[in-house]
Image 1 (cartoon, rainbow, N blue to C red):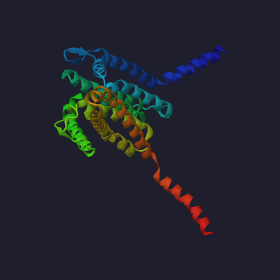
Image 2: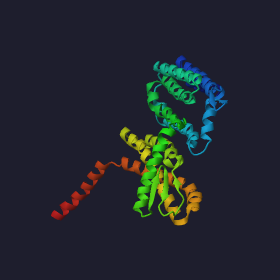
Image 3: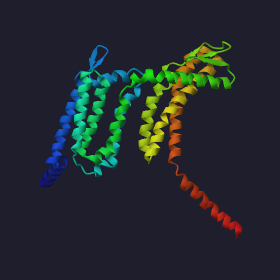
Image 4: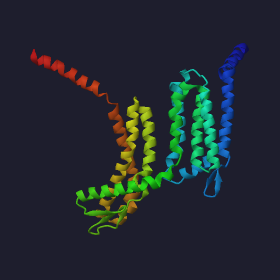
Amino acid sequence: MSLMEGKSFRQILAGITGNRDSLRRWMLGIVAFGLIVYAYGISRVCMFQITPLSMFGWLAVFWGRGGDYAHGYLVPVASVGFFVWKWRTTLQKLPVASSVWGLGFIALAMLLYVAGVRGQVPRLVAGSLIVLVFGMVLYLGGWLWAKELWFACAFLLFMIPLNVIDPYVSFPLRMFVANISCGLLNLLGLGVYSQGTGIYSQAGRFMPLDVADPCSGIRSLMALMALTALYGQLAMDQGWKKLVLFLSSVPLAVLGNLARITTVALVAQGFGYDPAMKIYHEFSGYIVFSLAILCMLGLGTLLNVRYRELIEHWLQEETPTNNLKSG
């Protein structure tokens, strides 16, 4: 009995360590994990205003601000979950073969990290972590592992706040939403006009409504882009379908906020400014985002329909009926 137990222990130990190459990979992985924890989680290399923070601390500040980048908390969780799913489905069956190309990505990550720290560009520091993780996967697991896990690494890009592009994107979106909303409201007979990013009632039925940054679609855009990318990777079977679903996040976000602004004006016209802004406006964002998700699911279902097989099935059902009538 003891001999069997000793043999089983040796088998387990051999399964963990394997040969020297496997043991080397394990040791490198442990060392790399420790360096990542120190470089990105302990070392205060990112400045927030005048406060030095670690890279993870800097990210947590933006994630904790509310609706803009609150989805950042879920991005690493989803990325790890994708890895677990791949491990259970395909990774265990793939051979592990180290690739020296991974060292190139690791070196690039180190350069990005140094440049980000020296230039005080926290987003560059965060980006270096993504390159580093992919380089480690490639070096320790090989190209087959990198092919399976590239999405899990790239998905981490959605955790980085991109509020620096808001001044270049948000204002044009606000103008677009304000103008289109005015057109829709005039078609409904409300009699409004737009001035800048504001919507005004010609009859003075409600106070001017300003299309602010949150209502432009920029807030929901980043969350929808992350959601459509993840859903497409899991549910779509072809690359072009994944791309179409991902690109659909832009019109879905804009149309959702267009519907929100239009309905806010309708509520203000019918029930007054205060009910529209203090009640409906506060909760309409959740409703609109839920509708955008439903539209995403509907588009995904339409993309996955095998129309050729469906048409052939209909034609096969029509053939026996025609033959029966002719007989």
